[in-house]
Length: 511
Image (cartoon, rainbow, N blue to C red; front, side):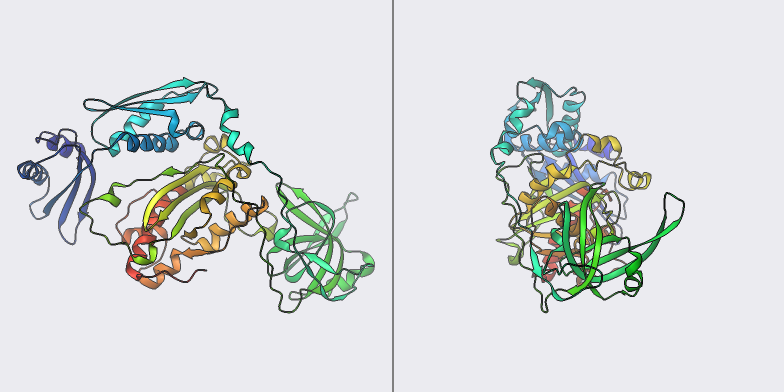
């Protein structure tokens, strides 16, 4: 149907290269709106002919509206779209590309481009064809292009990252232990490590906190006998961590007397296990955090000077510059920067205290500057573990898609840089997404500042809906998207956030 409408429109003078940006059906208002993009100047008569062409496809009892945007891209706009097009379908190639690797020339009817790709990348099959199709969705005209081999090596791409590789060790914070009392240990402990700083291996480390959970378990010994051990979840108001304890026979009754809410001091061994820190207690005594304990601010690694594995891309949207969209940006958005992001993960476990926190497999983020979506940041992340069938089905992300992606150690410094100085925004960001990025950034020494806005409570405050799932809120604003992919969810959340602030006319309190 759309192809037939477009064919009819292109028979109209000065609309030979036109593309259809969107067709919006409003059943209650009985109106169909067709948004066209053309690269040529047109007259009133030309527009009337276009309206007649569209009218012939619209039922009589519906109003027919044609909105036309004249858009003639320049070389830089085409170059940005090429980068976006490669990034969308060829991640491994996109991380090696910069603006200097793309050449664009204006032709009589459109544009011709050339993409310089490293020789070490084995195949560029389908890249130029995919980019051409991507450009045709965005701009009018004819497009031709090709990939050529460049002499640039992978080492050259890492030069910027290597230049900033200065040693920086994040200080481990400690607090003084109050009310210490022996339970089974022999050495008085005076200070404990913040649980949120427990990301290192040590033969002896002291932790202290309230017991949030106790689980008694058994295991089989080598002689096939059952032996009891305990799993404790501790909370010191900076984080919650789980530790394992194998009791001594002489202190077993005292250990059994411990209950949820008690404050204890544990002398532990910490070690890496399956990518996470595992704590095993050797001794347990009584002790607590100081009264009125206020954690000191975390010291962070400096913001990286350069992007390494993932580089932001300029973002442009016809709707943002559409002359027919009369939209006033609220003053509260001006002069401020927001990063709206969404994640796809290997599961829903966002609590490090369980000892088995799930991993990020995709980050999608958009930077909103002065109320306008200005940049995108998107990448798959190799979780270094097998994806479950359920996650593959839910997200559409396969093993092949993440196999060649960078690891979180490579991605999170770039994400930290992208977020620097911005307020973070997301749909359920407080309960889910922030916990992941905060944890994986902190593991590398990058401490995100907790300045966040969650669009779920904001939607609940301003809208009256049956539920406040992302797709339900998106429907409220007429936004169609591919749900359960981070880059799509992040973009629709950014658009929702801007619309909600237009309604509220002020920013909500940061969480």
